[in-house]
Image (cartoon, rainbow, N blue to C red; front, side):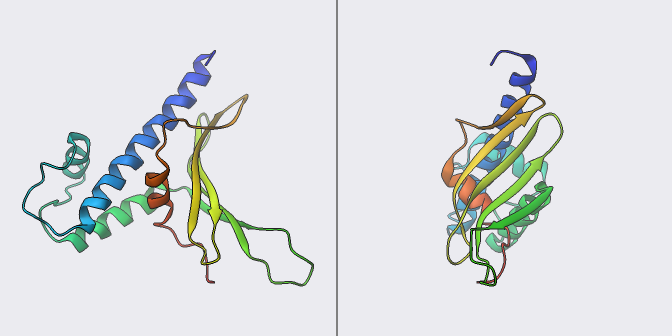
Length: 156
């Protein structure tokens, strides 16, 4: 990183990577039966839950729904594009993009869609004026896959 612009873009990507990892942690926690113990949650997860008034000791369905709504509210746009195909043949979606912020800097998640239009191989990228889209080295693939899985990419 040579310039302030490079640093700003990198740290914007890091911020999104950390938020997505924290949401993934809460989503994983919401999928398990509640044992009455929130000690397994990190301080970051507890802080995000408290900031948004999410009850981590209550209904798992309510927490799951609150997380889904939050994640879907983070996206500026969700796009898909198809693979190469012969003219007249049915187009199949091959890739997705979830745009999280734009301008300077910008952050997005790119990945592929399987035959069921489920996301896989996601990667977080950041970009700024004069800086090409660059994969963020700190983003957790499992967290990105969970995050991208909260969106609808079309029918099979």
